[in-house]
Length: 253
Image (cartoon, rainbow, N blue to C red; front, top):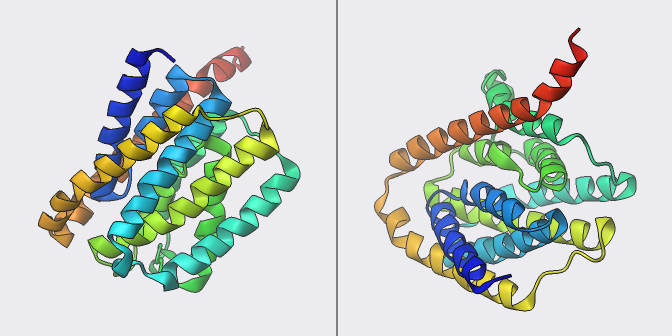
């Protein structure tokens, strides 16, 4: 990579880590799009995993005392089960269908009856959503608005949401790095210098975001986080529709 590209990616990593540091979401999606445009897919997935592990690990350490392990443990158990299942099949779906699944999922959650709506503090839901989010993470590179909508459910405050989701995402992205780096493509490596810059940029952006998160109220956090989830979901639906359109147009006589 050229020095200009390395500098540009580093700045993007700081910015996306800052966004995720405030809301615990959205930054990874933006970063993945940039990396896929600049690097081959296996390298982009591996570098994205390294960046997200560093960003979420540092965020989890900053808010460690707010982690809700009752919510994190079943989520990670469900994720581990899904990783084992997909490692056996090594199935890769059509990208357009995967994008539509990502985008539609949070809208479908809003149609569920009250007893089935997302609640990260309930054991069965933690297992189910952990498996579903890990599936999306392995198929598309991100778990998208589904994981965000899940952690916005329940009664956790903004610090608990950010901290608990960070711990779960460390596990998820480590699994993604294993999946793409060993199971799918053993040659998908990460340049050591770029990996070091990614870790530093992620820690810097996450640290800068802490003061803003402290100043927000829980009401403000949920309002803007909900809007982010809706915007990201709409993007996924639109992206998936654009990718799917050529096939649909060709099938219509």
